[in-house]
Structure formats: C-alpha cells, structure tokens
Amino acid sequence: MPATMMNARVPTEMKKVSISAKRQITIPQKFFTMLGFDTEAECLVRGNELVIRPARNNMGGEFAEQILADLIAQGYSGADLLERFKRAQRQVRPAVEAVLEEGKRVAALEAGYATYEDVFGGEEEE
Image 1 (tube, rainbow, N blue to C red):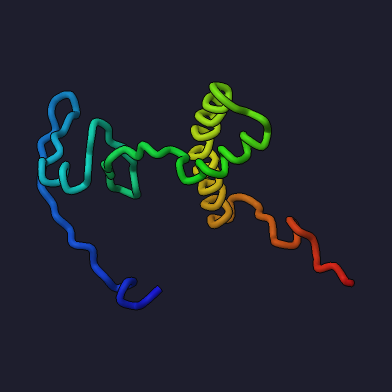
Image 2 (cartoon, rainbow, N blue to C red):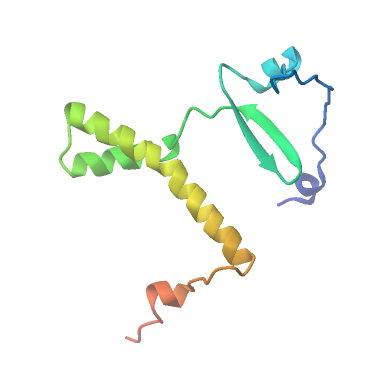
C-alpha cells in the first residue's frame, strides 16, 4: 500500500446528540444524508466505540453470480431456483463472519490452524 494511503487521515466530524429516556438518538441530518441512511441502521461495538452505519441490504450479493450458476448447474429453475437462491444468499454473511471469528481466535492463539501442507499435502515428486 502506498505510504500516502497509509498515512492519510480521514476527516472526522463530530456532533453531540441527546439520548432519550428510551435510549433513542436522532442522527443529524447532515450525517444521515452524507452516509446514505434509509430506513435501517446497523449498530456494532468496536473496542469501546458504538458504530452506527447504514444497513447493508446486499447480504451475500457479492457471490450472487456464483450461487446462481451453482444452483442452475444442480438443475434448479423457476420458483424453486429463486427460493434456494434466497436461502443460499442468507447463508453467506454468517459463513464469512464465522471465518473471520475463527481467524481472530487463531491470531490470538486460542485455536489451532491448518497450514498449506495440511490442506493440500506436500509437493508431489514427478
């Protein structure tokens, strides 16, 4: 990665907001528009920060073409294809999250890991 990208600072804007008795906040209009919020938001904890960002509606869409090709190759079509596609798309994000969580455990040495040789074996001699 170029040094300029590594050292680049992302401009930060901050605005203090009130929290109601029901733990509700109002996203300032400028931030709402700038970030492209619609009707839903995702809330996550990152360290000691609460991150609120626009909800991602494209759950698993990154693999849509591969999922469809695989289902079509399996012989699905019509309404059955659509239902199985939706089901497969919903499984992508949890699967990726599980892989990332396993990576964190391995990085923290809380879990074992597989090497390239474990997965593919040693080099074969010809």
